[in-house]
Image (cartoon, rainbow, N blue to C red):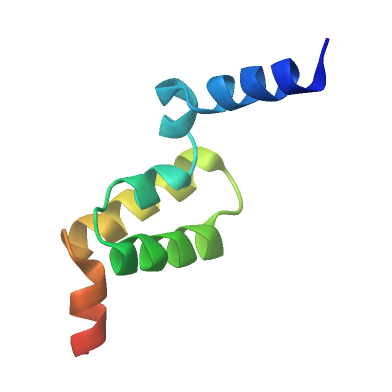
Length: 77
């Protein structure tokens, strides 16, 4: 298989919604603002160890508390 074809397939496969649902990167994609995405990525990657189900549940709780613009709220405190 040509390297470019293999890369294109890998990118297409990685972009599937089903895979993203089970990956902490889903929290980054949930925000529109660059600062919010940066903060979400930092927090999610810092906590992304252990059982995936538990990590995702705790990140769901955290980001629900932070609201839709976590960077603004974090910057105020």
